[in-house]
Image (tube, rainbow, N blue to C red; front, side):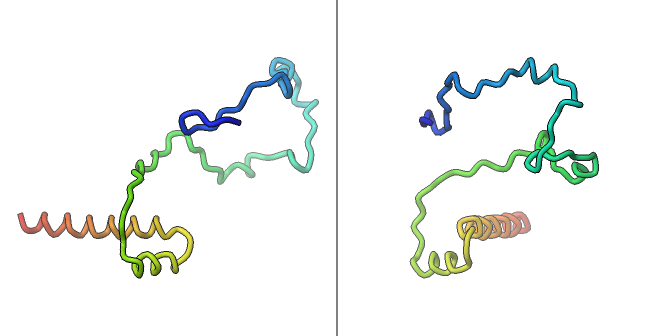
Length: 105
């Protein structure tokens, strides 16, 4: 694999080509189910989440931020996801500040 503009790009080769036309023409009765590919029912899919149409998460911007060592140490001590928590604290501060400026007007 090689990197191209931040995305993984696979190198095409002659190996592993699937005969999609043959596969599409194959009747369901010839499908072989295994432990890795078991038979499923509609109930198995009842709680599945379809990602099509879901809102796209807000874009994040990478920055360099200088914080005091003790503050960073405290957030890291809370465990994995400390940067997300720091973002949540900044968002809460922004929201609280926005509300206080709205009430002053």
